[in-house]
Length: 207
Image (tube, rainbow, N blue to C red; front, side, top):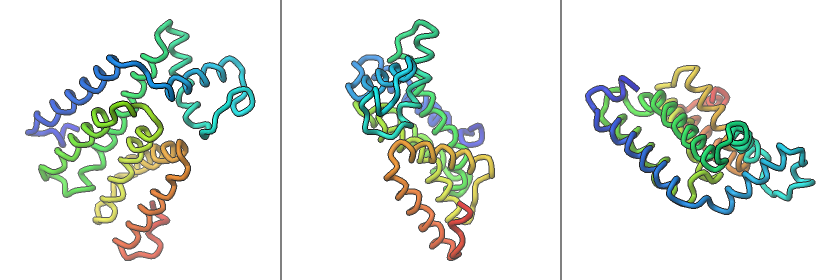
């Protein structure tokens, strides 16, 4: 982050503004029905209900699992569960931005101004653009698969990310795909794109 932001306080200011405005927008609105039900379902599971038997739900279990900490923390601390959920969601988005900051210099040539503004654009897309879809599965999926997209961009350009950053991005992308398993096709498309870019038939195995 320090290297990305060197000489570009405007980028850090933009990220702070996007985060603040995104949180303020969420705190000023009612929670949507989808998220309300997911929090309710997570609460039922914490109380001993069995998902798909006692709780009617058609989504894969990952989204319920991600809501369990918010409900548990809200109950433990005596806080509004929706508030805790929103704060944890903001933290999850922040993790995506921080991880993107590690891999973006490999996605584009390090030292270029474009890497700083790509990071700022990531903050804008994740914190402000979702609107009423904030915290929905599609929003989280996009946020958490994005660092892996940057990793693949760097590898295709011959600038592979560090092992830790690549593993973290891959793990986060795995959680994202578990939210909507059909998006495994995005992962397959990325592997094929990198393989074709490098001209190596076995390149996909190292992704």
